[in-house]
Image (cartoon, rainbow, N blue to C red):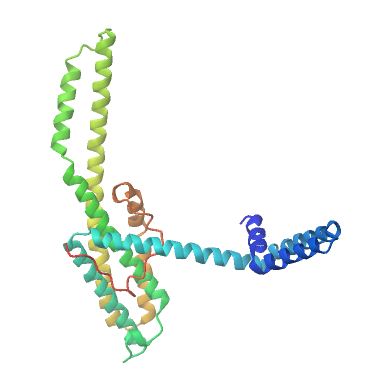
Length: 290
């Protein structure tokens, strides 16, 4: 962290500004400002320098900054969540809500095992478990939207038409003499060749999009199966700590999936999946009917 940041926070503290400005005003009004004002400035410089260099003050500033950044990230995640929920088709939305209900059931099982007979609202929230389940739900929701965005892209792009364009361009290029020195026909060949390379790139992009769409679909199935497996193991093992550790294990196993979704931001328009997930288990998520 830059030291200047700590100096700025120390100086702009309202109590420091009040004392400093008050002292400066008093020095000017005293009639001896040429003597007293430099003393006030020297004292202020020494004070903010000592305060800004104190480890506890620096820790406080860093913690406050991290809290503000987390709050901003949380707001962005909430906005992204609402956008996704309002954009998903009803079938995908119902799929997410079904998994969310499964996660709520999983957490309730853990709560019942830890404190039998008490509802989830009557016990302190297990922040570690909630964070892990929120992470899984956040990944699942974004997976559904990523697949939806890719499918829209694939529906709007005709592979057959691109292949026909490639064949037509190859034929046109083939009809031009390879050793023709005419500048005009040379420019025509260059334009056709560039168009051909663009069309081939489109085919490669389309193939990659199809592969990504297939991968995302498989990851959705895998994540849903993992959640259901966790619920079954929670009942059989009856170990709350085991539930939390398995939730974390599943979240960790989704690293490659998160990387793929980050790479597909150009298609989805979503921000990084590394952002703080919204509290999906602690709020009601609704969306307009399709």
